[in-house]
Each structure stands twice: as structure tokens, then as C-alpha cells.
Image 1 (cartoon, one colour):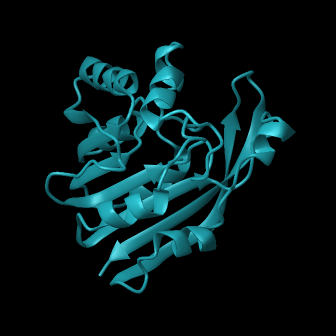
Image 2: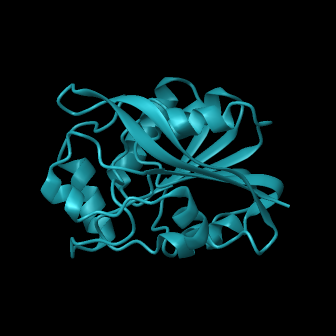
Length: 219
């Protein structure tokens, strides 16, 4: 995963292809899509946490998973694209990292065991994605005192065309909390804000992007 991860819209799609077909085509029909670097907004949140077991949902090519592994986490990533997962696993192995990558459709995939940290960075899609339901279900695998970290594009980047931006929804921290729906079920909101970060577009354009950042701690 990179600072501009490929799951780039909210959960209401306009592409009618099955998610597995769509996302595999996105990765298989091109070379490596992302930088392999951790998303900056995610790193800022996670860097001060005590490492344990971590799970990254929609991990893409694994930048966030690799970063967690480097920082002492027992890191796992899951993505629907076999090509993305293979690239993530290959990059981690080349670096000598102990990280696991799993091919799975988050609509039906169920984790094995529990986690101190579950992350979802830019888990946004132009094809069908029951995002809120997925996050609520997977959050049940977070241990008491553990965290769910959700980072999303809060506004379109300047290099996105007006036509594409018009088809997409960009969440606020408040809408994220409402969609996830855990605050009345034994969870505490630790962070709910929009954070700005520097980024570089596909054409080399430099810009500042707004991320919605939500951190929920299980009581």
C-alpha cells in the first residue's frame, strides 16, 4: 500500500464487474502500482502503539504490512487480488520480513484468531464493497485495548478528473464513525479528524491531500 492506495473510492460503486475480477485486472494488467511505502497517516497513528498482531484489510501490494513488520508487529495483510498479494509477499521476503499475505474476499473472509491492531487504509472501491459491514465484522477480532484504524480519502486529489470525482463519495470522520457503528458497542473514539499530508501523483504532480483518520479502541 502506498500514499495513494488503489482502493480509491468510497463503498458505492459504478463499475459492474465482480470485485475479484476488477481488482485483479487493476494489478495484473500493469506493473507495480504503488511505492511500497507506508501511508503516512497510518504510520503516524500506529508508530507509538505497542506491537502485537496486526491485520491490514485490502492491503494491496503490502506497503503498510511491511512497515508494521519492520516495527515489530506480527503482521498479516489480506487482499482480493492474487497479483497484489504475490507482489507484497515477494517484496517482504526480499527484505527478510516475517509477514503473511492472504488472498481473500473481505465480504466473506474470516480472520484466524485475534489482533491488537486492524487497519483499513483507503479501503474504498468503485465496485461493490459492503465496507461498514466488513469493518464491523472484522472488528470483533480485535482484543480489548486493541484498535481499529480507518484512513480514507476525504477529498479528491488534484490530478483526478472532475468526471471521476463526481462519481465518488469522500467520507468525513463523522460519517466513518456512523458507518462503522461501533461506538455504542464497547468502543471509544480516540481520533476522528481530517489530516493533511504531502503526496505525489502518478504524473509526478506534488500536492497536499486530505485524509479522514479514525481510530477506535475496544474497551
